[in-house]
Length: 363
Ligand SMILES: [Zn+2]
Ligand SMILES: [Zn+2]
Image 1 (cartoon, helix red, strand yellow):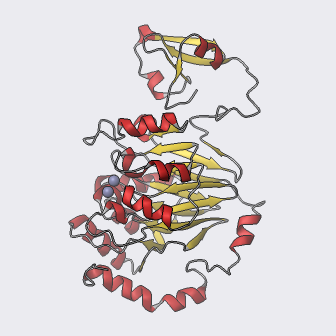
Image 2 (spheres, rainbow, N blue to C red):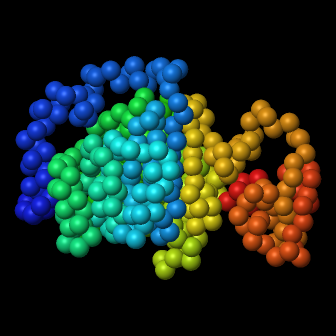
Image 3 (tube, protein in one colour):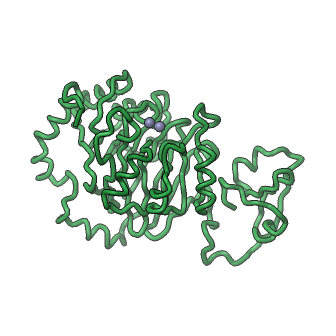
């Protein structure tokens, strides 16, 4: 490790190490391999759905995970999004956050965390072992100190419980020097047969190490790393995660051109449904432990499951772009009146007529 062992960050970490034994005895540390995790994995008859909210924070990341009244927040967008995230959390009934994770010290991830940490009761904060010199990072450490919280360092392989769901740390796997993106905390969230992978802005180097560490990566939903940038989502990594849905958190017309065209093409080629916060706003995924749905977006149309008796449905078609949409799709609402038509029928008929399904609403 070439990281300088000074400053507030390390004082927090050392304090955390000092109470590690106490934490373990209190049973709120990482789940040891001999702990009753298997019981959690097996039965969840009394459990409620797992909900993963990809909160629209413009160009940035913020994900709220909710299970059985337990909450985890991963990132909170730029500093000016702190209030947006806090009020979203309030609306979801959050009083206490079991976990707050700052994936890496870039401001589009940790900027809003200061506000959130000051506003809510927080049990555990995870940050990667990488200091940064910015004001926004200092403010985060101050908020953590003021609330008397300790920083927990992520260790690949460690598992934590969230209600009767759990998550396993899959990154970072080594010292990435000054590449902050590669320091991103990556995790795989698991509930029953469903899983989600989220890795902040981890780039291809970090993905290579995740592939090498031997921990499972398969997921139903992948939050595309680095806002859909081509610095991330290497072919090998995508092969292992092999998701059905790819969520991209990015701002409308952002300065970076995220998501990059190559990534959208790669998703299309792999038949992965792309869901973007710049097009859909906040995206909520729901898992009952056996399947993942996006009730506000793809209700009743995810995949070709049994309800798909080729029943007639209403679609909105664009006679100019030759795309068809679900009636509630945002781009359906914004299209020019003269190109807009309502169509009642099946998607097969539309495809035969030369229409293409919209990539964001997946009709
Ligand atoms: Zn970053
Ligand atoms: Zn970022």
